Image (tube, rainbow, N blue to C red; front, side, top):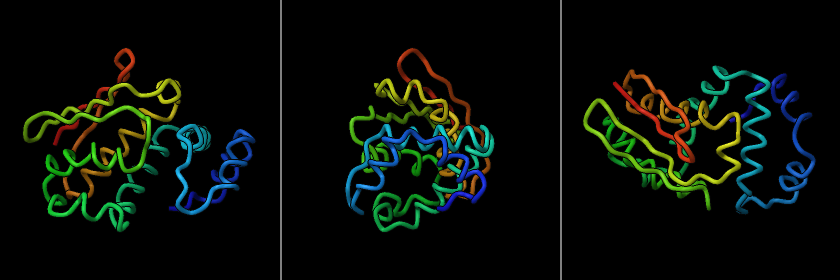
Length: 164
């Protein structure tokens, strides 16, 4: 999903030079260091604000659901929000390495998502909570379900509540 031109330009001019070098050197199937992801997220967050960044992450989830990489993970879950959210740990492992683990628990209409043991860079990233909340809202969008998400850091972990 392409970022709109003006905020994209503002975000790019603020990126750490090492981020640009890593992106330029990366081949299509290379793993990208998580710090690159966080630097890009933080710069875009600064360019569009918390609501704009949450909306971007929400829309990105819907787009990513069409990627062949995620089709097996999402198969049979799209109409059931709790089942879809329970696929989050596997989707997270597919995207990130050494980024902690995701735990999902709860009952229908209320799910708790915990991000355990995230690396310090994620804890310090200004974009992580709003971006992850946007991701969870995007998952509700996939299931065509209206809901709310609240989240915050809890010590060295993150806790999110998803209600619908």
